Image (cartoon, rainbow, N blue to C red; front, side, top):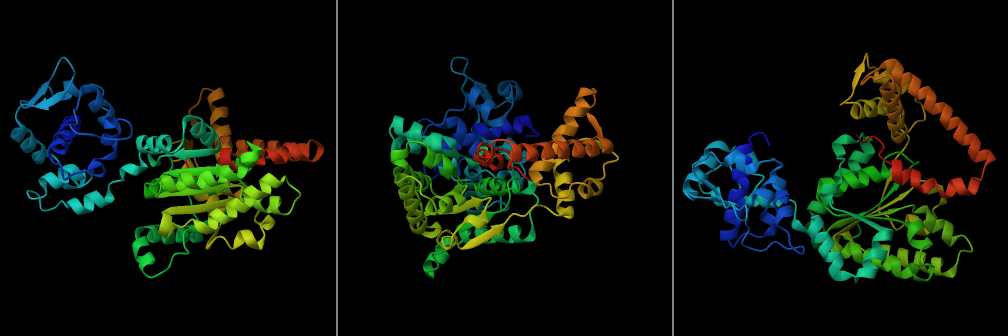
Length: 443
């Protein structure tokens, strides 16, 4: 925050007001403040702001030093708690300095000062504040309550659960096609108006299938959507859930959906969906076939409207899906390899913090036909590392051109290795490409 004094005073004042006003609940506390007050997944009154909690919540290294010169502040040397010696003076000082936009991001103080300041709206502030159910502490507590210790450890080996604040990329960091933008806009509206959709009987909505080659951004977009919506993100790879604990695969599938419903509203992202078709068409172990049938049954039964679970499937191989798999989804979103203009846009997004002399993204886009967003990130990484070997942090256009040529040489060698080497082993590792480098156009 730009004003350290204001930041620390706001934190102490928020804790003080919340402690006194019993009409406020956990969802009213700004997420950065909630984090420091959790105990066993809950926030209980009284909230006692201290030097340590103020440091963690505001990011200010020495919070007491920042406010110690104010006439209305005090610190307990024993426990480090921060208080106001004159509450009225503190509030007057705060109101004189805070702007309405900043106050609107704090429902606790918006409600407290709503009668004094016409330009703030508590109901709007509360609606826009991320609900506490999406906080890491609450997620962990819900999982602990639901599973015993051994079960939880096993499930978290199979399912990756992320709180929205743990997702670094945003939709602004990603270059989308018009179709992708349209589908995301529709699903955001569906989530916002799910009560209306339920009232008119429109319940078959909220199951998306992302299709496209590895590295085109399927996982990235799903994660960024979770961050935008402020929802927990539950990610599972089908090959993982069916390759471990073979005799319990169906039960693991059931538990995956139970986790999602337990953490709802949330996004459940099922990667490698083509695994369903492969299994149904093969002589796989009966336990795996049962797991796939259980998966399809659970997909049929889960609902954005009833269960508040947005289901997103992803596949690199849509050609391998049969009709039974396709009909489970109400929207199909295509993730093609980027065209020249998209490659240029991606390069501009990914390089916005880099110093590049004579940078011409159009020229680089021209020579990177067929590369995905993930590939372009690898090209830029190579260019940066090569420059660092020459003790340079400023890149040139030629560095990028050289990195493209180097990438294409390695890609050619890799393809030759796939032809001449152990093809099955390489294919089996293919899922990691999309999971590990599917950052597509993000920065």
